[in-house]
Image (tube, rainbow, N blue to C red; front, side):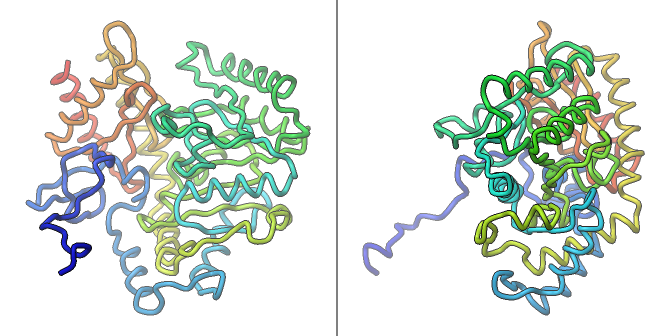
Length: 427
């Protein structure tokens, strides 16, 4: 064996930069549960960060994956089309708002956000994009340049891509105002940005999460979103809705932005789209999509045949089992229970969100964000066989509630009861 081939007995390992929120090694999943190698069952209130919306290994999704895998694993869409991608584009187009009828498929949410950014710049011929403080749009350089949910994501990578202008988001809790006051302030500041920083004639559009994810599950509000729509219409800018985490029924409606009675020009989707298979998409009206430059969309694995088959089955399950309605119903019950918990535990400073996308903000005795407490709560809940995750700019101070859309009331009660016990244990 040559020196180049001699590994000296070393073994490979996962990168030490990959951090896990739990110590569980998942052997299998079923519905709302994960099982470790010993067969211990954990209630999964993370859904793989909102991905396994139909639960783990839903039989209909698994059957669709198996059937497709027997026929065609990969049909590269720059070379051929396969039936699953054609059907998915058609069925997803039916779910899109307004006149959005043209779909581009890629693998991850960050790729879809990059594609939406390119389309906005190409279609308008303008360089700048407005994003909102606290937003998360991905980890690749273009989408990372639009991300401001946590400084750790961007640390050591400056300078970011140019042309990104950050405007305030109506986070009423952070400002200490009511929603109306926060909305009016943020709209005024946006107008000030147009007057001082990014002329509308140089601004392609606005890129926004209707419910911010990584910054702590912060919903926008109707006044603010409609104000954005008015400004986009006035200045011929495009409104891009990042529904990667909030879409596909998560908030009790198929798209979260519909809570605010606005029509976006471009919608980005991923996560729950294919029940765990890697797939994302960008939807726009064909007339807008055609303004993109040739060659600006593509990718080796985008629109993979097996992933598209899983996505078609996911739509069937969402409809057949009434999962959007269940998310609304169980989400309202979860919110009610967490509000009751807040009354007894002042360290739960805020409970916010929509549907099955809820954040509980933890603070210390001085009222400051308490990421350490949130971390200890997760470990205490793991001991009680409930898996949770955190988010938030201040050391992950927000415990987030992100169960699969199939979750039952009994499972909600189990998770909240474990949360109460964890709060007491970590006091």
